[in-house]
Image (cartoon, rainbow, N blue to C red; front, side):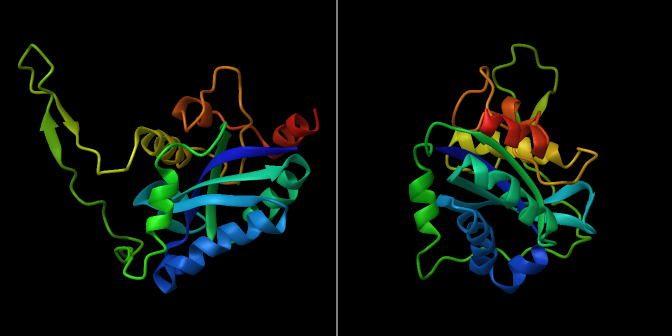
Length: 206
């Protein structure tokens, strides 16, 4: 039995600078090696990490959707954990590929597609654009960060989970099984509480 997963991969910018498409292929090759099928994969963002992971301070975020048999998960996770170019893996189950993701992923296959070259590892995060909270009745000066365009809310929530992973004290690849409360298509709350590899494999065997 195969299960759909929505997964955020944090990739070493050294690999992304050399060849972005090869960096994405690294992820899909490992998934397929263990019996999985990659449905979508695209660049979500490039960001500075809250703390150093595998000696890196920044990473490129790749949002992917794939399905894989339960018995392939433990060995797949092990491969990601051992690969120095994969800094972090955070995942949760979904029912299917969210609407719009297939089109965003396919757009990256265009001949003229390119991404901004990742900055140096010690580069500071650029200043964020803010806007006034117009819905607030009181003029209390509150301002909120304006998020860059993502394509859809599911992608935003999935990446919010991955950014939270940078504050996790254990920089190891993890795969979170679904809970009854977890909604499909990238709910950040479900992904914010990943289980260990052992718990994920035990869930699949059950």
